[in-house]
Image 1 (cartoon, rainbow, N blue to C red):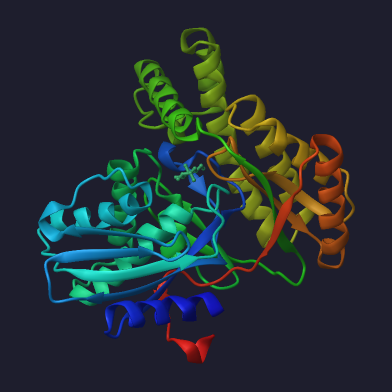
Image 2 (spheres, rainbow, N blue to C red):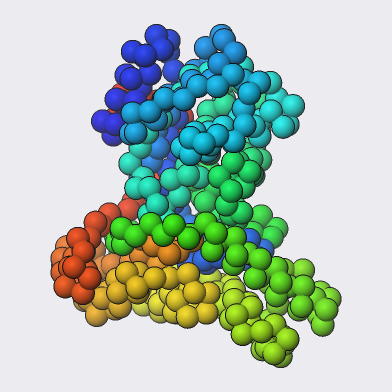
Length: 389
Ligand code: GLA
């Protein structure tokens, strides 16, 4: 939390006025991967790896951005906001552009931001940056946009300025998280439901493979296209299928030949993953963490073999977790091709689990392993300042 204070101080020193302070969390996803852009179900939670913002209007026509962690600055005229070569600035500029597209005039402002979400770890640092600024601007400009609108604007920023055709899960989780609860989102109707997640019975531990695959965003967009192709073919036979959410396993299997092997595998994965989310929620309500964990392992196998978004490092980590004591379940998390695995661990076994994973990673791949224990926190909000740190 010292970091949040440092960001507020850096803002005051550099810009000489009083900022609004906002915190925006990253997310974990317990299960339901690559289902969001297929109109399906996800089960994320906001966690205590966060981005902090100090933001204030500056009475000029210039936007001044400071990336505290990178020690970099970027400025642009309010009427010159467009996609930039400065990659980190795009997440913020993309959000400003969304306000402007809605006809909201964005005056000049100053912004210092930085945080503790590891980048490229599949914990949605980019969504946290987008959602944090969207929330801050909504407050400063008194636009009173609701959180779902802010989530959609942040998602659009990702599409248009970062070039990733992401679903809504990450932005939704960052804005709608609740302390101690996971939230199931129906990505078609946008209905959502909170489920208590008892961390006295089960801890969330993330193992960071350290791999940042350069193909991640292009392969992500390819997966989306493969799913769309699947829907087009399914629709010709089953007109009620508007997205893979509507398709059944039997329908996909019946069209195996016409879909072709690759699209068939992608579609089957999505249909089965949606079923797993439903089953997992049922197990969570029943307090059956063992059964919940089995759904996670099955999810990983599907991501590895059918959806093909895992990688050797993630597979090694999941296989190692499977042999460690006190593990309910493990799987890769997020878009894939690197990033973290999410592991549900019985509290008294957390230390031995971490030691086990580090040893396995070192032994099998000769690599050091970073791990994080995640606590489930509230979504994006105002940060009251030093009293809270
Ligand atoms: C990334 C995207 C999300 C979601 C996941 C995979 O995190 O931003 O919208 O599609 O991948 O579940």
